[in-house]
Image (cartoon, rainbow, N blue to C red; front, side, top):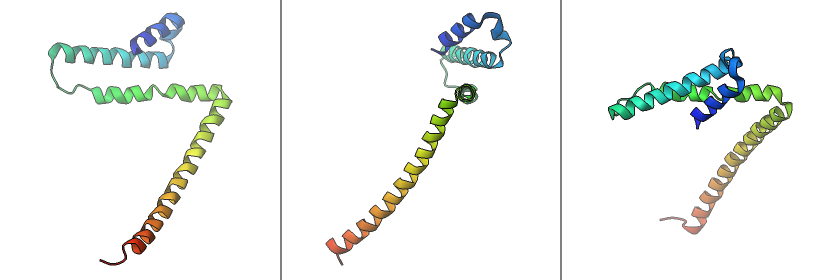
Length: 115
């Protein structure tokens, strides 16, 4: 899928793809991942090639999202709202856990008082 995406991106942007650093970075990640996969397949070995670095590089591809957030202010607002909602949900979960633990202790004392 990544190979098709990279190929289509180069096909669409043609000569501009050589000047865009993000496209070149994506191409580097895709080509090196395909090369490592082929080497592992040909050698049929479990030798860990720089796969961890490639996975980190794949994560760096997500920097495109930051560029999209700058283009669309509505998307930026939605992401910030989601982050604030996640913080509220986390604090609510912590409070629910504390209250549930308190009532569990009370219930154990009443249901099974002393051994």
